[in-house]
Image 1 (tube, one colour):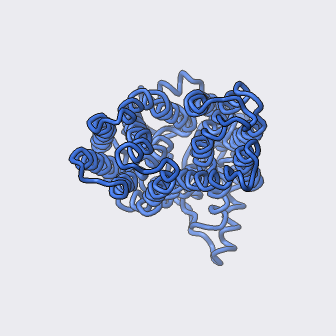
Image 2: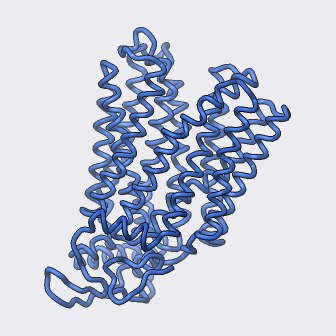
Amino acid sequence: MGEDVHGTAEARTVTTRVPTRLDRLPWSRWHWMIVVGLGTVWILDGLEVTIVGSIASRLSQEGSGLAITDAQVTGVGAALYVAGACSGALFFGGLTDRYGRKKLFLVTLSVYLAATALTALSFSAWWFFLFRFLTGFGIGGEYAAINSAIDELIPSKYRGRVDLIINGSYWLGAMGGALLSVLALDTRLFALDIGWRLAFGLGVVLGLVILLVRRHVPESPRWMLIHGRSEDAERLVGEVEDRVEREIGHSLPQARGKMTVHQRGPVGFGEIARTVFRAYPRRATLGFALFIGQAFLYNAITFGFGSILVRFFDVPTGSTGYYFAVIALGNFFGPLLLGRFFDTWGRRPMIAGTYILSGLLLFGTAAVFDAGLLNATTMTLCWCVVLFFASAGASSAYLTVSEIFPMETRAMAIAFFYALGTAAGGITGPLVFAGLTESGIVSDAVLAFSIGAALMLVAGLVAVFFAVAAEGRSLEDIATPLSAVNDESPA
């Protein structure tokens, strides 16, 4: 199962079975360690975003220890967090492809931890804004480093469902953040200037636990293979195989299929751009459509969530959190229950189906809302059903861009499309939807829903024609590495 090496140490040609050896592994405790060590960052992201939204009114109160207004927290603070996430994804994405997955997923989590801890110590608005930006900077970097590492370490048979569930776990953090804020803001338990700081502090504690586990997550053998560390890659995969064989009690089957690569230095941004947009234009169009569609659908609903319940259904402001918990639960159960079908029924029908179905359901919700046939409970249930399918679709957007481009460009491709979607959701989305959903006019809210639904339908139709049948296939088969010798890229 070893490698064949030709040429000089500086520019070697290596023939190896490392990718097929990783893909033929059965699910094991080692894979659970990967999931826990890398995947739980989405819970932190959901926790962060929800906590800030929930404590905005507390931060603006006299006696909070911070001279800031509600609008500054939810406006400037949120925009800076989004800007930080976009910047971090692009900055760390390039470094992840250049210097490896492990180095960067340790660095990005450390940036998040330090920035969150310093946010908890905020004494003025500028300090709060600065470290909200840096918190987003770390989280954005996480998306590129973590998605690339997960896809390269998880066997192809399970890659789709694992990736979807991990991305969907954001909503577990969102539910946790909502419940935590209720506890932290209870002045019977904590003073005005202490509770909100403790809420941020919990994010630090959880991050430290994740960091301890993450220290044991290895570098991607696929990345090592093309960056002059083929012996390390072979040794690491051998150690994993030994662990798995001891766990299952019998020898693993022989891995089939070899790959020959010419080891090379880092790939520049110019080559990445040419590869993504010139060599794979259909796939780039697919990634663009999927991220824009899900970003606008989520903004169409989430920006109108609270105001619609309060304005049209007379729900008390303090009770909207309970409705949010139901919606968040639907968001999590979508990827959890539908994820396996992306590996069995296939990527194309499931990606297209979840996008188109969620778009149609949102159109239907808009129609019955416009007709005055809903109350707060049924409106929430409609949203919950829409987002059950939309969440699986949105998670599949991250899966798609992380597996359909060559390995040398993977982290940067994830970073680019993530930054694109985040910017659309965090910048364009609010500009389009905030006024529509807060006007108190039914037709305006219906228009917001219709825009989000239409873009989901368009993205679903793009997936019908452009989605790649990646289920059960090796990453190297889906997109041939730029370092591969005597091979051609797939269509």
